Image (cartoon, rainbow, N blue to C red; front, side, top):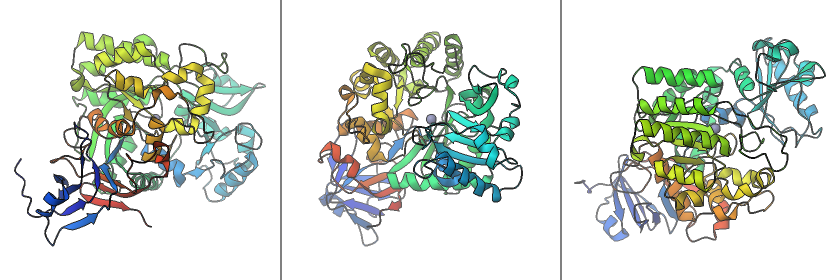
Length: 548
Ligand SMILES: [Zn+2]
């Protein structure tokens, strides 16, 4: 390449530059022109290509890395939870009594009939040690529909008007929905709904454009502060959210680059409709540009890690009677993957437990046998892919399937996972096994489930310490800091077919960069949680600078 080096716009020098190139080389200096990296090398060589107009940032030994790519981040949902709708997470609300007070206040600011949306209770942390119920909500909001979400997002409690919005008016109506998905207690609706029915009711909840914009702004700010320069959005509120994400990218109010999965949290019919419209109209994965791209066709097979409600092959260790959630059948999964693969798109699904992962692996095997595509052509993925075993990992490796790990979860839920899954913790977010098998795992925080601090994601991959209890959970799956950085940068770029334009610090790539206050390769790895992001640069522009 023949670059004109004579006037670099911005230069970083005296750094510890983790390039994440093929050789994992460390450089001292980086030069940027417009939105591209045009120089990577020594301080001495950099000096030859700066002039008085160049803005020089002296790193003084600090670390410069490629921008981080969070491969599973729901920007609108996390913004909602981050204050754009009413936040009732502990310790903001310590009891049901306090939640009721919050609702009472909201009622005075909401028109009659307008939705009141609350997010984030956890019955285990509430003083009453129970779930919120329909009576609690009706008592304080008789004239407004209320949605009160548990922190996991899989369980939502609604009042009488809220349930009625989805046609649930009596215990009899509960029978029209999935087994146990509308909870009936002593012959009465108790307000609690689970999974598909909760998602269906969610589609009836009204959000204003202002609420969505506010949510995006909040997510933008936190991502930049955490060092995240690209996200893969695993789905939000159906079609309006694709449109608003696109607008936010174009008008610059949401700065991280977006790779959008076609998936709606409102449930199966919504996601299928989005995917099928896309495919039937002849579009393909990759439509868009480096700021906003339509990515994969996504669906959702089972429940979550922490309920626990994922679909496992063996019962949960702490309570063998507890059923997992399974929304897709084995054949149906295989057929859907085949449909996506046949149309040259990238497939993925939320598959947490090993049974759900098995469905996916089997589906990919069938689809790729019928219509073979090379790993770099399909880059099919599995979101979460939490529980596996050696056989599943080897089969994934043969096809080049990308596992999307939520390593952040280890730092907040690790001890619970040990309890729920027993020995399976040694195959849980199995980063070591993936890398040893030659896979290219990626990392995503799944906000709002976890917050997007890059240091937390690295901590979960490298140390696997539950930071609440101090317990190390599944030590055999720990990976090195350098490996974790690669998963979080270049592998993330690979997962969106963009490793040729971002994910490492190399000449010609987009200038998406992060500066840490310490040398993150030299510190004791357990101290990664104490490192801070000093700068975040996207597209050659510094969009975050830490105030000291
Ligand atoms: Zn998710």
